[in-house]
Image: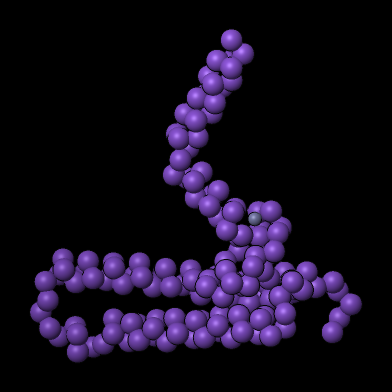
Length: 146
Ligand SMILES: [Zn+2]
């Protein structure tokens, strides 16, 4: 359409459409689930029953957490759909590389390529390990010099 360079052109139109449909379907599913749960929470019949207050609070907390997690996903899907519109979908936000279609099909909201994703995960989990392996590496080098 426009003259703007579409950066997500590594995806074929057909692939892009499939992913978009997937995202729209996911969003609808979540929104349906949220409204089901909200109805359940607000059900007046529920209030009449004498339930253990602490227990019901815990349930509400769990529901709230669930709802916020789903809300987070909805936001992410909305952002992803926006990225499709502006032609920036399917690109890794770390290295700017193309995210392969197979990965996007498995996880349409993915915004990092598998390499960067693994890097960021091992960075979280393995800060100590990295430090250790770095110092081991230096020790090995020093030994090499002797
Ligand atoms: Zn990357």
